[in-house]
Image (tube, rainbow, N blue to C red; front, side, top):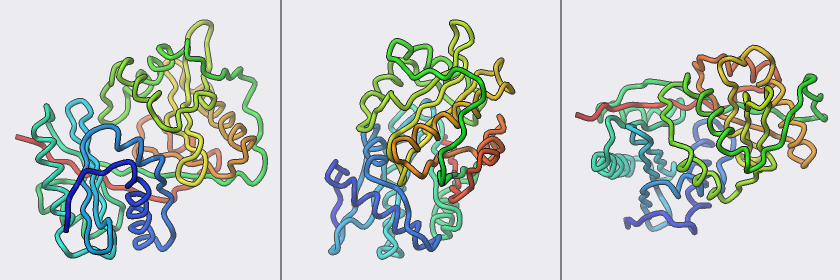
Length: 290
């Protein structure tokens, strides 16, 4: 076995390992693509394990506020060789050198080997997240009589402020700060602000959605938020419907997103009400650092 950092040339192989794991657990091909991996790779540290057949396991590590986060995967053909433990040791050692208070990692629901690994290393389950999707068989209806604006870079700070306020209710939200967030988003390989939309109340930006053009086999809703004082007015639904129509216009017939299964803002009910369904469940594990 050899070890080295993950590079841009490994993006497809890393995505293929995730998809092979999904298929082994769920009985269908996974939809992780190299564009999603590219966004993860540019944040922190990484490790790729290779055996005689090529990439066998890998992990991406980052720190967000007081939380160290890592996502690792072992190709199903390489299970039982201790590669998962090696990834965990590497990620934990890197995170412990950072100003982090705890560690989060995740696995697909039903991955018994990963559950056993994390529990054995002192983690506990703390949250579940869903990947939800919709197939756009026909052109979606227009949103309610609300004016939806396409993002302009002059709106960047107000857009961030609205999104950050909206997500302040969410589990383990930690503000990145505008400069960090803006630099990170513009550096994404598929940054496309023509897919970012917002709703105003007078001069204030009160609801926003940031979409990605081609993730997980279709369009992707990266973040949707409505500021507290403007909730219950249908703004989230309007932004979703507007996004669906734009994806459909561009030829994307599938749209997906990720959501906290216990979202305190009722996001899961909104997504179900517009026809989205759960197609994957992830489990988040936590270890508190001493």
